[in-house]
Length: 434
Image 1: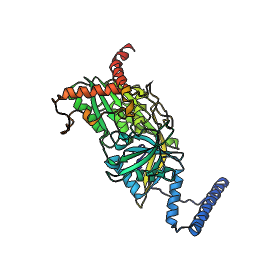
Image 2: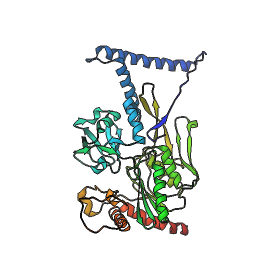
Image 3: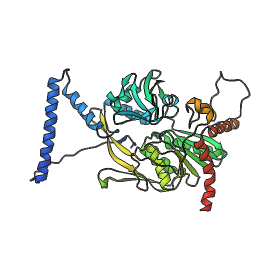
Image 4: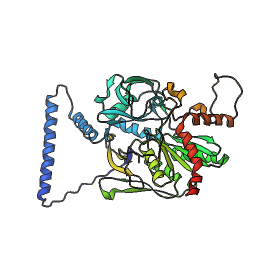
């Protein structure tokens, strides 16, 4: 199951029972037949009189696409190629620029750029409007068509005309496509015993990556506190969001989903595990780019009073899409439910509000960089990174020194991480006061 892509197989059994129909049922059937009759008339008219030759199969497929796309920004028809791409994007690497996009009133909107991807490095931000793709207006594209045009072979470029949030004039941004990495968890020691755990998305391996990295650190140093960074995380697999939240919860409800039928409610629970970190102080950072599965984790930790949330209000993607495969290899993605936090809050279009609203504030020296380095750290900041053979010559720093230098840079540049560290250090004292 995936927030945005919940894979399932449906077998539809139709049973015909001959019985007198109530008057109301007859009226409903008349209405249905009238709608089908009108559709058939338009279909015949277009097939016969349209200026170009078009097949009935094309017309019906386009009708299905239009029907689904008019429901909400996330329901869609998936061609056989689209269906394959959807499966690849949740399990392996793929070529593109690394953004999660959606449609809002015909506008193509960036939900969030994925960290360490070409889109992120090019300065795209959550809320940006994509007006054109390679000079063609995006109003003419469906969501899947736009995704196809943005993706492409590694090394090729795409030109996006972007209107940044609050800007008066759009700008053209040329981005070279690359391989979008599948590594979803990064860790960095901020101070002795205090770890920054950055989750960039929720794919098939996210929980294992998180456990492996935290266990690796715990073998060297007892963990005193964790700053969990979910900023600009576009979401992903529901099961992974549940197990990540479960890492910090001993038991109880994490999230539930419910569709049109009240009986369709499904609860997802935390369970005890040897890798759980239920007693370690925890602060979670969120922002407007935290969406879908990231909001599930944040909402669960907040409702269960397990973590202090700081940062900015999240994106507000709280719907579940069911992906149904069709016999010809195509499929449909249909919104079938909303998800709710343990306290019964629907996040759809509302988002998660942090306990402490702390906007990101770039240091003055970074203003000229257009916030390019905000809430991130680079390859050179990681432990055991490979040195550049053409770089500056000089004395090699030890691993501990390089690590502390990287932490200092992050803390200096990122006021939200800086506050997160200070708060997580204070949480044990606050609990004692209570």
